[in-house]
Image (cartoon, rainbow, N blue to C red; front, side, top):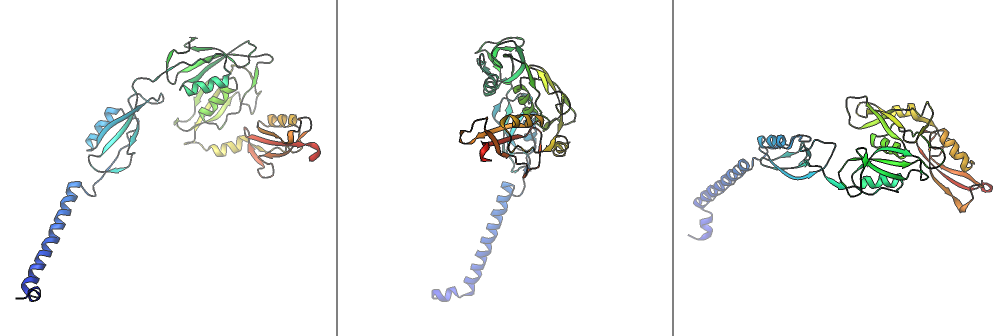
Length: 336
């Protein structure tokens, strides 16, 4: 029988169809077996492990047929030591059984840093250096000295602390500063609507201390200043250097700060066009606004300088918030 005749025969056709069916069945069975082996389509949702103790997080993951691995630790004085700070994959991710979940935990032992030497630095320099070292400003104490706001002494636990002394990261360092010559009274800054961190930094930078902190909402997340005492919107805005300012906080999660700021802090944008530099300062202080960048074009003298442009512009932005920074540009009065 020729090859062509064999290929056309019923016998070959039957054997070919049987072989094809067997091949398809074998492929189907292999795919199903692979699905069973890899648990195809069956995933586990990763739980939120943030702030759990590491032992608790590890036990929970093992019960869910996931593998916990602690791969790093960080220092964070706002969290419980030994708790989970970061996880990878994140909470809610869908993963397969036996997937490794990497955990970053808060270090049990505090991270230590060497105390820097702040003596004779300005307060702003000292504040910046402390932040670089992971430390923070504590209580500001002012004593008579010709050097205004210069650091005369650095203290910890009511005693002096020498440069190079090991201290825990996050420690508050108290500073003794000079009052300088002349008045030792300073303006109280307006911090309503500011975050807690911003408010503390601004008040310290104004040579004042944080007094009592009152939290008005149940949540202590996303805090902003709701009220301050003394209230610069109602009372005198001057205090002796080193005095305290009390802060009342509300959470953005529970309170509409946008509406509140419009109601409490909104004012008409002042028209500064044609004003002298001294008039600008006076108007901004009266309206509790901040003088930002001053540009004197063509080196015009302050005596002859007059404002010809401002930002924000009173025409384009008729209302602004108290505490807004205003930039001004000057040119010679004869050019107006």
